[in-house]
Image 1 (tube, rainbow, N blue to C red):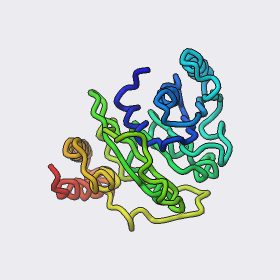
Image 2 (image 1 turned 90 degrees about the vertical axis):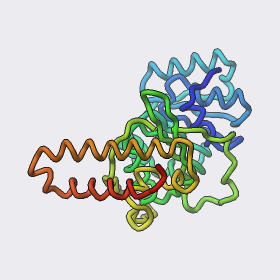
Image 3 (image 1 turned 45 degrees about the horizontal axis):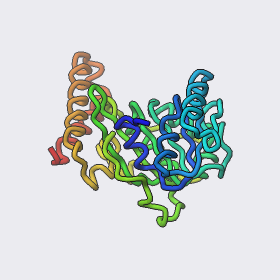
Image 4 (image 1 turned 90 degrees about the horizontal axis):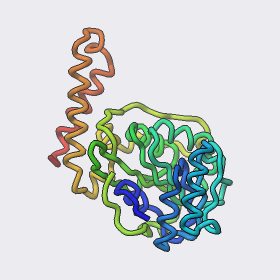
Length: 266
């Protein structure tokens, strides 16, 4: 099976020999590819709609994986029981949708060793939510697949043993979509661990990705340039309105732009 660069980067963060839940699986390409590589032990492929579930069952059957991949129809993590899987992948959705999925079944989300998330937009809010609700950002990656530019975020519960770290399949290459400027908070209820993100990461770190800044990435300079351009475009649009120019949001974006320009990677 061929897997595109985006999903290969996601696969690189999935721990070896784990039981994977692929939420929003569509055609179940990710779990089937990982099983063919001998990288995971088995998988649950979940999707909310009947069409994608049928497509997933077709893929699973075609590749002889019916004994190792169970396709379940349902909303988000409702298809999984707490403790049933080791890793959850949620890809190709907006950051706010991913947050809603994690919130809706918080106990299930907290029971896994790894979250591998690929937001189409809203990565900064997703990072903020994760940190505020007890996850550590372990690794991040970038994929440039014109016209898309993807971000991939790998996180673990803060209580998780560091012994499982670094057991990913291969090396991650790259991930994000769009240069969305997103500095909003996504605080929610139901969290047993709450750490104010502002005390841990700056707005620019949440937008760019703290582990990308820490470790470097071949696409980091382009990533920062895209976010700077997004800030500048937003300020130009807001600048046409006197009310918008006087708003707290305008000042917030100005501050973010200044911080992004000061990173010094470009």
